[in-house]
Image (cartoon, rainbow, N blue to C red):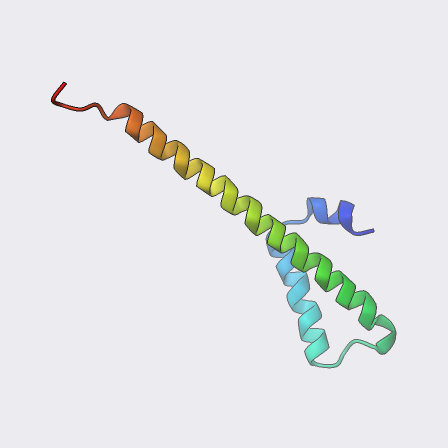
Length: 80
């Protein structure tokens, strides 16, 4: 249900929504009728954020590896 919406969501938006759900739970503002819906949504947001962090980490590692390889290929030994 939320997958299509989550694809377009940004990490910051997901964290803000998750924080709001947590705050509502801490303040007991969620009715028993809505509790399972909110907990399910929170779990979806957590999974989304974890995946976003994982893919961002892989992207950054790839960029850094490319920089290292680029700088290594540009350096030539001076004693050749």
